[in-house]
View 1 (cartoon, rainbow, N blue to C red):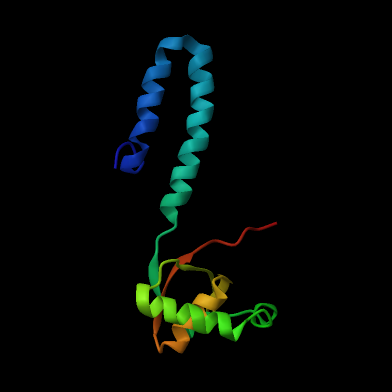
View 2: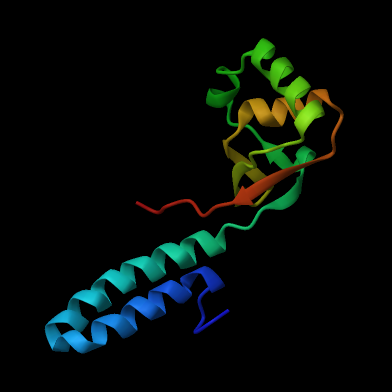
Length: 127
């Protein structure tokens, strides 16, 4: 960690140093670009993959209707061979988690008898 940013963000600090010689206008442009970059780095850093209990993941009724059993079975075979490559996305609620993305991955893991699944907890946007 450097200056509150992950190691990969060290490039941002280097760019900032390079723009320092361009005077106030250059620094102003650089600051705006870096602010956006830092926001992106921090948002990425907030998504941490973690094991989630499958029994705590609730699938909204609308999403259940889109389940293709054959697709889940094929994905289960792939996960058995290669492991779970892509985490699901969930949001927390008072009863556990609500699935946002990854219905077929979730169902495939259930078919395999798994008790946990890798996932990202994301925050729902307030409109």
